[in-house]
Amino acid sequence: MSILDRYLSSGKGKSAEALQNEQAFQLAAITSLYMAVKIHESVQLGIDMIVKLCRGLYKRSHITALEQDILHSLEWRVCVSTTTPMEYVRHFLALLPESMDVADTILENAMKHMDCATADLTFSTCRASEVSVACLAGALDDTYVLSSLK
Image 1: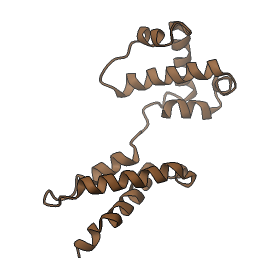
Image 2: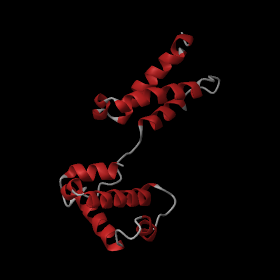
Image 3: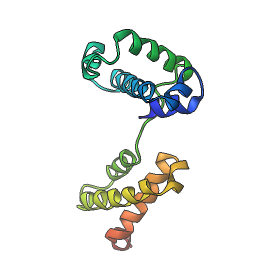
Image 4: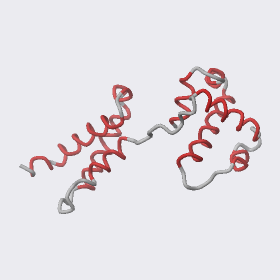
């Protein structure tokens, strides 16, 4: 959840409190989820549903107040690109000619490489596009697609 991660690392607003207090963290997480659904999903998840999911632990006013705090802390930059490395891989694979019947195999191998990359802290500082190219290169090598193109 990009919104939550960026909020907690911003050091602004009530983010420090959320890192120290379990209830404040939970409220930040549920509010970030609510915001992400509002921004990125076609279905609506109303604030009343969020309150129900919280089983009354948080009120509508708590969620809306923290939403404002998050927006101000992130300087309203909540719609940054959240393209995942696997989405990049899928875009690259869409460029393959239809006559090449290896896209599913390459995708499966790329997912295996992604599992390894996710567990490796080295990749946490890389851009999603860089990780995707590394995973795609490994997947192509695993499927020997490059040698068949020579």
